[in-house]
Length: 155
Image (cartoon, helix red, strand yellow):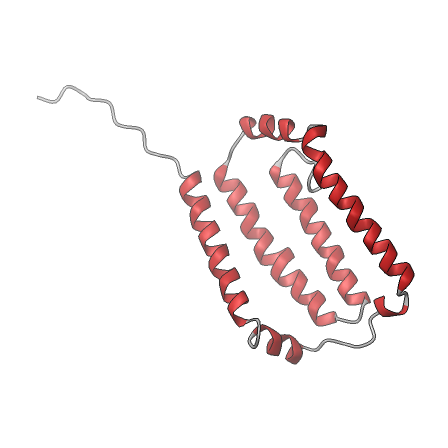
């Protein structure tokens, strides 16, 4: 429903629901800290940022018309084939290796911190700069230019 909604705010709300379900999967697999981080960072902070950007852009009816054009069968055929391939691969892995897909341990905050600020530190910093650049770009796209004041017969 995230992909098929015509209104961007509705799509974002459905995306938050999917992120919450991902957090639930993390919790079931034995990673409660990763589930909490998923809720706090993605479903909380980043999605609120997206909602603010959508509201700031305020595209209106022309965006709905463009999205209706994007929902044609021709535009969906490629992603549908890729989704079928991914689902087939997931089913194959689940049937071939059933024991390896269950959570056997717990991920604690120390392990997450070591990973984020160890080998993946550059990726985390680049992601934060990318989010900042997206926010600044959305601000510049969405800001309204001031209409020139009418000339009132200066003397």
